Amino acid sequence: MLRYTLLMLLYITTCGLALESSITTDTAVNLPDIFTAPGKLLSGLNGNLSPAQQIIYIYGPNQWKMQNNVNLIEKAGNDYLITPGIGAHKLHIRQLSWNKARRICIQEGGHLAIINSNSEEKILIRILEENKVSEAWLGIHDLFEEGDWNTVMDESLEATGFSKWTTTLDINVPDNSNDGQHCGVLMTNGGMNDRECYHAKAFFCEITF
Image 1: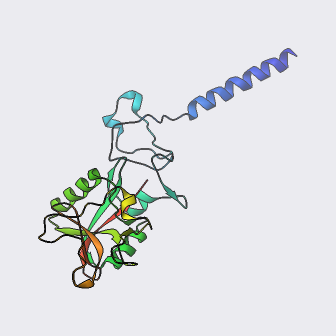
Image 2 (image 1 turned 90 degrees about the horizontal axis):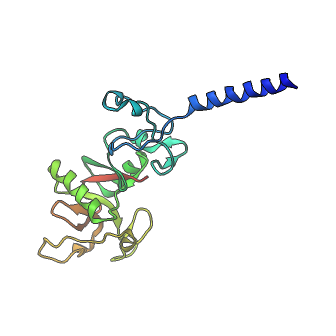
Image 3 (image 1 turned 180 degrees about the vertical axis):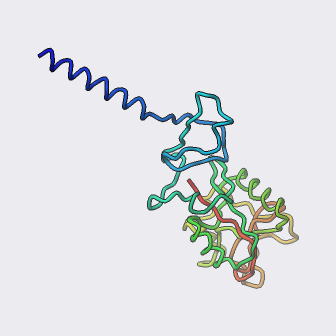
């Protein structure tokens, strides 16, 4: 009996040490532009952290949207601007029609950008300004019915939380000029505008998480 008790104590102690050595911290660090896949070590950071934060993992569904076990940010590359709580955005400078732009965003694991707040609009406008681009495609259209604006995610424009059209033009928009403007762009001076979908323009892709 004594031998059995000693063996059990040894087993419990061994398991406890193994469990302790396997624990990794999920300490939140104020590094808004750095994300990593579940269980992946944040490389290149140890020199900037205190001893208590030498090994830090960021993981879990709140940080990531997983699709077929593929990390969407890694799939898209490192040229997305990541804004915690809003999403990840990328401005494609090369100009394409709205539909071709839509396909490129899908290939990158995302979709044409959909603005959901004034804060998100400001972020995208800043990107436009920094790249000296006057306007870029968004993921909105009224291709199904004139005046019924929807997103590429099949929700109404009103449901997005942002439906501000530009007021800097001499006309009220969207105006469907020449009965052919059915796709939306974001203007550098603020607000959206309707354009002919076949026109080649820069475009925003977005990955949400």
